[in-house]
Length: 338
Image 1 (cartoon, rainbow, N blue to C red):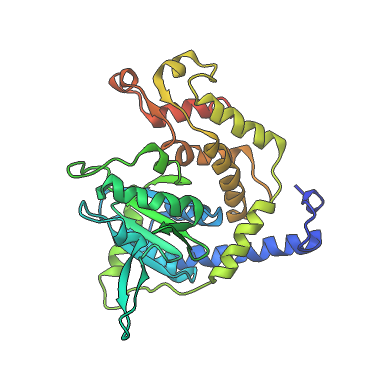
Image 2 (image 1 turned 60 degrees about the horizontal axis):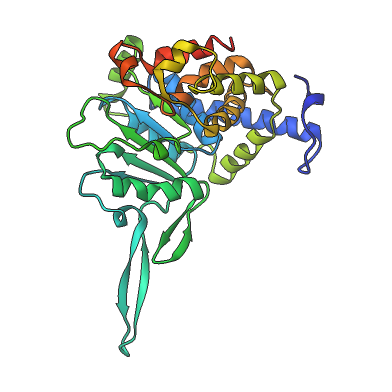
């Protein structure tokens, strides 16, 4: 796609838009390099995390302990210049521990009034560590903030800082004392990224870099204003009709009442909704920009399909009993658009 294919905007001419794309691309290269000095071997995870933030969404990281999920969030806060806080989710964590609460103040003349004390959700980058250990009531406290970027306390609405992103982690191994996230909350996460073990070369580099006297430190590259500008730029990138058709075909093929594959229709309990299509539209653009391209392709749709769909659909009991997995189903769905 050439510069002539870019849409005109009120922000400036096509040349200015193209110049902004190049500038953001250079910033992204520096961001990836800065994260790479601290996080070793998790290239795909880092890229999909950046794609999520560029798209303005929230991310669910699933992996066993010790794979640098917490370190990744802290590093992102430093590199992107975002205020970040961490909430350690436990069964006794209350909603007020996240969103805040009102306290009763008494002045000297004896007048009493309520004052709102803001919780850790009032930040730009919130890490909810082991989110599935929090009770359903506490998990629901994040629903409004993730969807509407505000919280309600005692009938008053409080806007959250911008940009606002939730990066939650989840341990796939331990299920005792956990509460599975409801489908409504899972759908609020733009991507679900599975974090695997690093390869041997990356683990070797990690050992040499983290067990000496001088650990590598992340450095700031951009600020919140620049991140928001990049997020607006993502929405202005052109996307071809073939890519839009591929997204619609992929998502609708994952619904039992819309798919042409009778075997899949009998295996899927419920399929992805319109938010999956929206997520693919945004993340495909972000992936293209991250890789230095002006517009996304069908390859972007296929590459991002697992992270977009795996938490937005489920198999029925018979399919699981036969050994079918969500990953296998998504691979078959991608065959329809490849």
